[in-house]
Image 1 (spheres, helix red, strand yellow):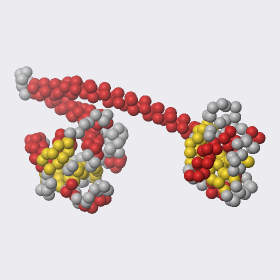
Image 2 (cartoon, rainbow, N blue to C red):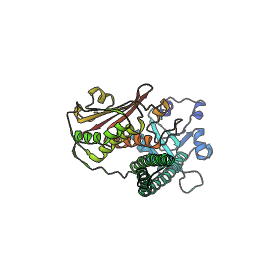
Image 3 (cartoon, rainbow, N blue to C red):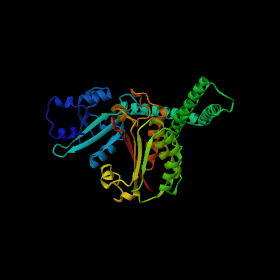
Image 4 (tube, rainbow, N blue to C red):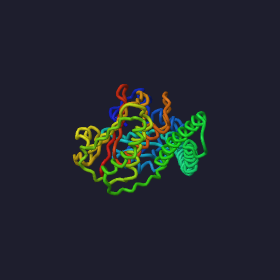
Length: 375
């Protein structure tokens, strides 16, 4: 409170009553010899009822607290009495200085009663909202198995009918069944990502870190998506030739989920053109710029840099600015699974103490860059 510096050279003028905080001027024994108008406003009283009385009459344990505050040059939260009340009803923040030249003590008070009351209300509202969110997440997670099973059934049976298990189909029947099958698979993808996102938000993800071969995992995932990319005529390139450290001590299933989420984005949103995934160790400058090594040695081989580029997908500036704001409603309609996937990646990667960034531009496409520690 800089007001205390002003009080050291205080002169008789109207500024004393214009100060925004309450000011007590006390004698050495705590007797009140002057107050400003703000004190009268806080205590809802007049000078006649204050002057000549002692600081302890207006602040609980006033003398002891005042000595401590002066000696330690500190501030404290205290309880204040309003005239006529047996119990203190004011919450005050006080600080004080002793002027050796005048033998006076100046006390500055701020009324924190309303602020603490507002803080209590906000805290109660937050607790209520958090409880509702937790209950919502639990309900949705409990329901997810049934919902996804039904969608798998729709997708599976429609696929079986298309394969001729129920007999020959007319051209129109095939058309409608293809639409049903495609929509069921898309909805299954979107909801599966959304349910996983709810699970990470609920804090129910438990990581099981163990040693595994990162390059072996990358190769196995590549094989899974080869046919899909070939069928959609997507040109996909994978390069991990500069990755020299392959032993990774993280949750293998989650790392696999991260990489498959990237491949799913390629598969679902690349209609033509090229997709690429480059994997290696990040440059030293890259890590320094992003303050990765604030508490670590400068060994770039402790980290893996992933650069996933898709030419067909472009986000505008508004989307990019809010790409990791899970429930932001932008002007462009996107499948819920796309944003849920990106936010899932962010949640998992940050849990591993990594980092993720998204860059997008017309005639370039979108680059998702993320870094994971190997351990």
